[in-house]
Image 1 (cartoon, rainbow over the protein chains, first blue to last red):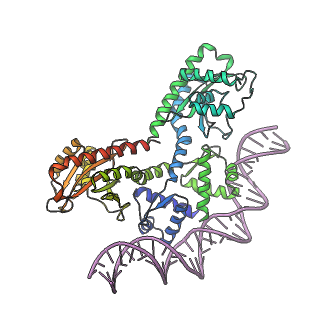
Image 2: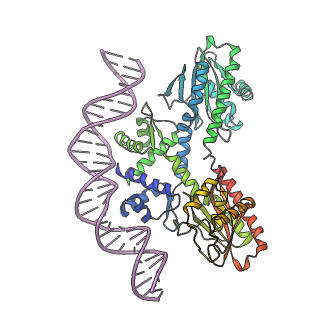
Length: 250
Length: 250
DNA sequence: GAATCTTGTTCCATAAAACGGAATAACAAT
DNA sequence: ATTGTTATTCCGTTTTATGGAACAAGATTC
């Protein structure tokens, strides 16, 4: 895959230089023939990976903003969240999930089971219900009003368990409570026998970029422990939000 | 340039999805044969453009962070600065320069002459003396101590005009004054007959990412007007810094 | 303003690299 | 153990990239 490697070399040279470069300079710096450099730059330009100004000087294009943003959101979120989740997990020894919220959908991307990281989950791509899970409710609770309206309108609320709450207005009500408390909860709404607390991870615009949850078998997750675990989830999510927002600044 | 276009398509699909994808899914989404997809992904992976986790799921790699950063610094700086410079130019009708500070070097990247944008300058790549120009001095004045020491050590101070100040200690002295005032000045230090004021553009870490200057023929740039123009440069640079830092947050 | 240098662009025969259908191997799920 | 699914490798064929050299377009000098 020669062209690709060469294209990468060219992009790196442009990136290192940091200012627009002419084709001769690029070809010298990359040690590639001028004709070849020219051809590759042409192709890169068609894809908006490089821009050419009126003096035929090339510089990197805006396409990378999009890709970098995407990288930051998925891979970056895991890298940043991992140590915090690990710490939380050592404190409580329960199952912890990390979820990413992308394109108005939530996906599990990371999981720790009793202090042992399971890592990237295999079944990525499967949408996760927002109305019936701890993570989902955490996300819904911090959504701007109009986004929540839109979600409730387009979504069928299904009885995933006998207990699932499918009344839209009552759901709105508890989401408001979750927002005030800073964490969400859920008792066998999505899966029989499992009870959860969750909290949202926010980006620098205070929009949810993901969420975390603590899942515990319902029989040993008594009411009186909900607030304790909820606050743990809330605090951990806040730490992640702060680090994530910060590391995303430049 | 087929491979390149296809690689871009693959990267876009990964970016749109936002979470790791398997090769089958990618090949379906891109409408490319699986073997081809596999080959291209392999090449992308070698260059760290994509990452593969333990479940053979692909996601975008960290290389884009670097490129996006580079794009933001050069092209982004011009886009952000342009309207502010335009406004300044309409107020004073004098020549204005925008400079980028990259790899410890400064380069002119944009110029407005008497309210008329000249645009990207052709002679990019030519290093600009920091000790004798308005923009350069503005940058030096806000540099951390050790960076300034290092600059003064490695740089030969040449008499570019009969008036050029080449005494290191006296230069240090006036740089300190510039830092306090928030703008730099220079009278026929770099070019006979031209007098300048300048101000640095700072990123979110308070390091200089560039600078602007106002250049006026010395005969009509009297001492009493220096402070007025200096403050204009300072205020404009501050506006640009704020917008640049802000837009760079995510 | 003509001549000269420099830099960008196009050409094209040749060599090399990508192509992709199909076979195989590695996993999961049943 | 079996079946279904997904990833990987193979390899003859075709397409595509290659790059030296010629050409064109600017820029610079005289």
